[in-house]
Structures are given as C-alpha cells and as structure tokens.
Image (cartoon, rainbow, N blue to C red):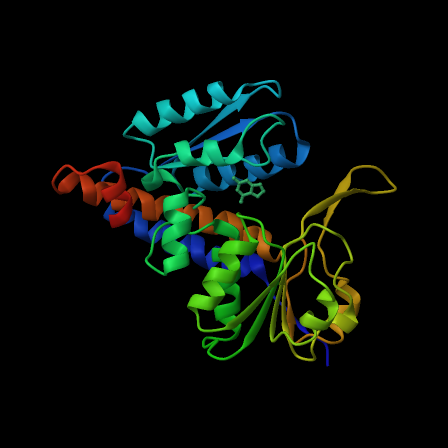
Length: 300
Ligand code: GUN
C-alpha cells in the first residue's frame, strides 16, 4: 500500500481560516515586519510568500530590505526601531544573514513579545521547559501535521535528523513535550540510518536531497520532509527538493509530506498564527498594568 501524501496546503488553509476568525477579537490589524538582508534568491522567494499571505488575510506587513554588505549594527538598529513601534506585533529576521553578522546577537535583540520566529533565547528556553512562548513556525507546523495524523504520541519513537536552532532543536522539544521518546541525530551521529529505522515519526531537516532512502524508513512510519534545497532544472529555472527519496519512501511509509506542498505552506500559516498570538498578547498587556519586556514575553 502506498503512503498517504499529506496535503500541507489544505491543512495550512485551515490554520489561516482560524487566524482570520481570531482577528475579530482585536481592535486593529496585526502588524508584521520582515527584515531581509542580502540577495539570496531563495530568501527573497520565501519572504515574498510570507508577506503576500499576511496581506491577503488583512495584516499590515512590511519588508525592510538591506544590502548584502549591511552591518550587524544596521540590522540591530532596524530591530530597535521595530521594537519601539507599537503597531508592529511581529518581527521576523529572515535567515541566513549575510556573512559577518552574528545570528544569535540579532535574535537576542528582538523583543521576545514580538519574536514570531520563536528564536529569542527566552522563547527557546520556555519551549524547552514546556512553559509556552512563541514557537518557531516550521516545527509548529510539523507538529500540527503530526497531530492531524496521530493525535496521541505517547510512547512513540520520534527521530529528528538535524539540530538547528530553527527546526531540529525546537522540533525535538515539541515532540518530547508531546510524550514521544525522541532521538536527535546530527552531522556527527554514527549510523543515522539504523536509528531512523526505529522511528515511528521521522522528521528530516538537513537540506541534503535524497538523504533519507526508502530502507531508512520503518514500515508505516510518518515521515516529515523539512528539506528545501533549490536545484537547477535542466530546462531552466529552479525547483525545490526535500531530503527524502520520495518515490522510495512512498512504498514504505504510512504518511509522507511532499516537497513542495507539505511542510512549507504550514510554516507560512504558522507565522500568521504566531503574529496573531503576539498581537493578542500585546493587546492584553496594553490593557493591564505596565510591565517589563521580560514579563510581557512571559505572559505571551
Ligand atoms: N529561513 C528559512 N526558513 C526560515 C524561517 O522559518 N524563519 C527565518 N527567519 N528564516 C528562515
């Protein structure tokens, strides 16, 4: 039997519908600002997709474009200006940043209450403690996909390939919080293939096309392909490919996310959800007593 191919676009539509409905509780449209530094073509495509979707649902969305030779100080100054603007609820700094800019320092500069990418140490710490906060969009989207297939993960073995701050680590934390037994593999792991074969849920977030072969997959496993590698097409242009050898996996897995059309649309939908969450928490904080930035983030 062939695996179920997960329709990430349909699931994302549902998330976006809920966001639209949730906007009714606010007295103004949520505001999202995206900082994009450099000319990485893939980043430009992703940011256009995010801003387009935000505007479609009625958010105020703006992009701050910075040249490839921009300095860290300039990025930090833009973030400080956005932190200070009350009508901005969400700030996203598109990654990767140009060489020479320290990503962790940049993430630390974003007001945690506006950190819709969930990359500030406060939000990452809250996630690892299971105490709320804003959660990175891709792992959040993956969890929604997994939950749509298996509502209760108690006791399942989940394997996450990759240990980035943006996907691998938060993904493992979410799965652990959902009571799965989690194994995380990375570049130095010995025999990743053997470990993957034991996975009921397998998430690959590496960016290496064809890394996960059919014989890495446990029969009937749920496979989430987070890989998004741009490869040139022989006829010109580019296409996005995942980490999983899709045709092979289709004959082994129980369910699999395609690339494109799987995790990608959920990442954008979850960015909308996080922006609404941040807007609501900030509106609530405005209604209550003045608080420090850290307290406001804690309340988010
Ligand atoms: N680059 C690729 N994916 C992402 C994402 O989800 N957020 C940010 N900020 N940068 C990215």
